[in-house]
Image (cartoon, rainbow, N blue to C red; front, side, top):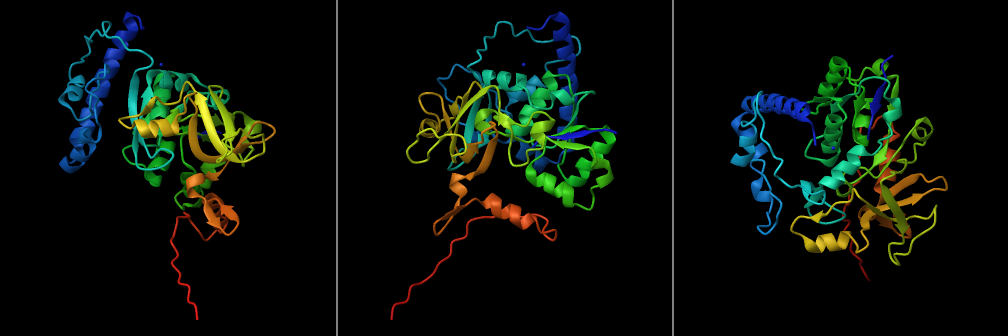
Length: 359
């Protein structure tokens, strides 16, 4: 029976030639994809340059997705030649990608991920390696503009895995692709797992042999921070697994900022080679999120148990304060979803206005 795994980086001459042919194929596929789209969709997809502020004094060469320079990269490769970039100098500390995130608070910000960030994450263990008894066929169900989908794509390419890209992320399309391409690894969000379980389109008989590998991460950590690894960790349904080997972590008191002991709830702080360089053009937000020692201050309330498992309680900015209680919305959502008549649930803030009448 086929098993499906769900989970919520100088080349020699021959390798360069293969890379050249691969880029040529990708160019043809991408251009075909663009030609198939209508004009309105194409403008929406490519017209993004105004959202990114480029520092004119930066030594890093930036290519915008909707610029003529980027489009020229799709046409200057062919099957017989490639451009020699040996003279170009790229340092690991240079940023390689900018992905947008709301951060720990406030509006969306451009997260600068460096080459080092991506190298570290791609080479770290994900927890699924020991299950690889066959060629991995990953189904890209996440948008590539998000850190989850982006790192899954990078990992698949670097590890010679098969990656199936979808034009839409509708549930029916995903289920058809699992069947058609024999996908055995699929990154999903918790809400998508709920949708898979409750949808009438899901053939439950085809999902009898499924392992759900849970994890935790942020755009600011290039996705990975903690993950379940191995059969004994997968059964811990209350945890997102143990801390990744590439990270340091501590739980701190939200008020005193003192480090807490295992079992005590507090804000999660993370540090490692996969932590972002900073936010683009927002030094204040960077200083608020990264301390001088390199700690990334998340807004997530968590604790480590005595066995080192990370348990996510909620997000500080989302806590519902009722009388003397602090209620995480996730707890209410979990309670609501226990009702079989409810397909999905989301708890959001609602301002209750009341009047005090004095006689």
